[in-house]
Image 1: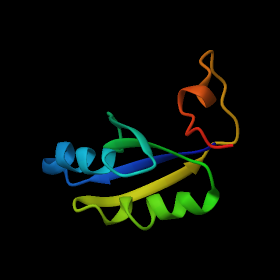
Image 2 (image 1 turned 180 degrees about the vertical axis):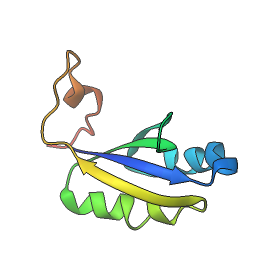
Image 3 (image 1 turned 135 degrees about the horizontal axis):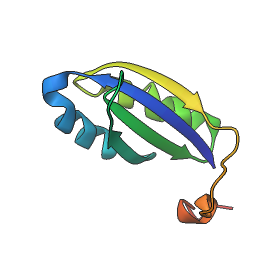
Length: 92
């Protein structure tokens, strides 16, 4: 599982609509409205690196109301939760 954390700046008056549109994209597991210098934090979980570009560059960046994004790829997860099974796509 490849996890990308995407910081999104959106048009302020459209944050809820932008968040809902992003949440509906395949490969997006969660969208959070957050405080600070960014408006939304998006978790993208896919099985191949090529899918990261497809989700973020090809779809997420093109959502109407998205002004800018910054993407971070996770190397390792440290959690008491079993994230692999929680977000398993059932693919071997």
